[in-house]
Length: 159
Ligand SMILES: CC(C)(COP(=O)(O)OP(=O)(O)OC[C@H]1O[C@@H](n2cnc3c(N)ncnc32)[C@H](O)[C@@H]1OP(=O)(O)O)[C@@H](O)C(=O)NCCC(=O)NCCS
Image (cartoon, helix red, strand yellow):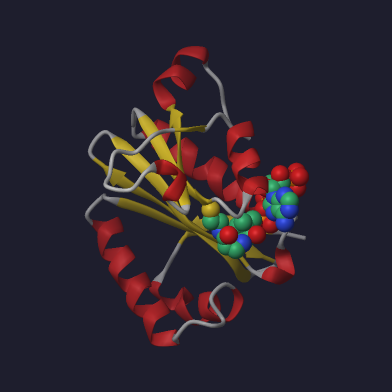
């Protein structure tokens, strides 16, 4: 099994629709990819796809907000789950955030997915309180933060 991570391209829209977003409207997948690639050109985003044996079967992105970043849109095709692709995509985006000397990275996880929260926590992400109108127990999404300055000091890498 040959696994490659590379920057997303506009031509990936059809493959991403097929593998990762089969229930979405293909035009929406293409529209969002085109928008993301404009953010990439402006230096505000990094969007990666994972290929297995030349087929696009996963994607994830890093959005830069000032001195911090956010990892999102992590989706792996059902046929290719539990093979470490999300782990690789996240590690690559964390490395990219470190190369850009960002201070911290956020990731959002749904309350219904405690196994993913446990995985993110194993990488060093920790839950944070977000101020807003709703009490935190009401929010379906939990935000976790990875302090990158601390990783820099300790020379730790996420693999
Ligand atoms: C979440 C998702 C991206 C994981 O992709 P993946 O390539 O299968 O993940 P990995 O194989 O890299 O798994 C990394 C770790 O996550 C945890 N994990 C992932 N899927 C899991 C599952 N179904 N049950 C339990 N733990 C799971 C495990 O700790 C796993 O490590 P391990 O295999 O060494 O035990 C994929 O299931 C998906 O696309 N789901 C739908 C979209 C989604 O929920 N995105 C995440 C938004 S936060």
